[in-house]
Length: 170
Image 1 (cartoon, rainbow, N blue to C red):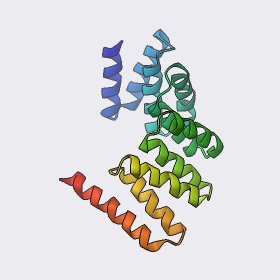
Image 2: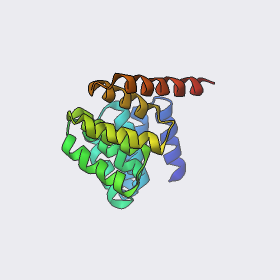
Image 3: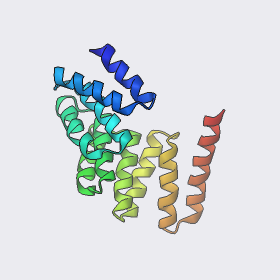
Image 4: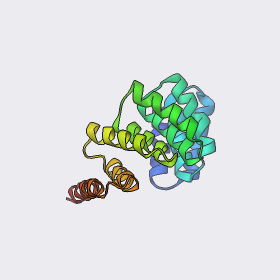
């Protein structure tokens, strides 16, 4: 099974998403409760923008083996579908149980989209404290600080975002 799972992942990486989905669906028919196959198939659906298809697979993956990655992806699917209450609920669970920079950043996005810029700022700050190289969180923090009228702080956060990008180029 893991060989076929790896082949389906390679197909996805090569951009052959429909072939990847077909292989993952075959694997899922053989073992519908495999959290890894559920998660990996969800990731391919996400690449295609099929969030509605990804959500039940991520829910199943979370039910079987909850972890920061599947909770964060589920929260991001809800964000992409505009279901911010479900996203917040899911991402609050992820931050409480696992406390990763990525989940804090995603939760900040929920608050930003809801117009609660102070809560967004708090989560983006926590995200960069957990991982000072999280360029998405630095960018989001900069954007949020601008919304709050804190332009000097926003410029500092944006500079950090740019500096991380320059390090990644090396």
